[in-house]
Image (cartoon, rainbow, N blue to C red; front, side):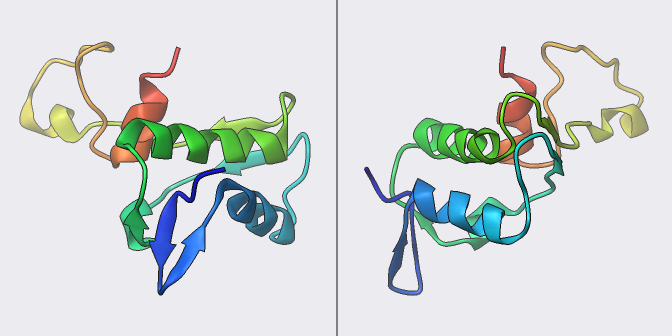
Length: 104
């Protein structure tokens, strides 16, 4: 298993994320609302794709298939009088929410 992050000289693995989420009281079937600043966690040690997918996977490993994961994925383009396009208008809420928005 690869470390995802280096933070304060410690390596952070997916199992560490799962453990932390469980210690926060999350369990199978819960609803999890995420609004994040991922890069404040530390230096990313894997590809962007692998990092983002590992984060999403950790959420679902804890909340399970019956859990609900929600994130803000909106854009501020409406303030600029731009047309909204479901496929092409990117989320301005961060890299994780944009990745989540584009998941099939």
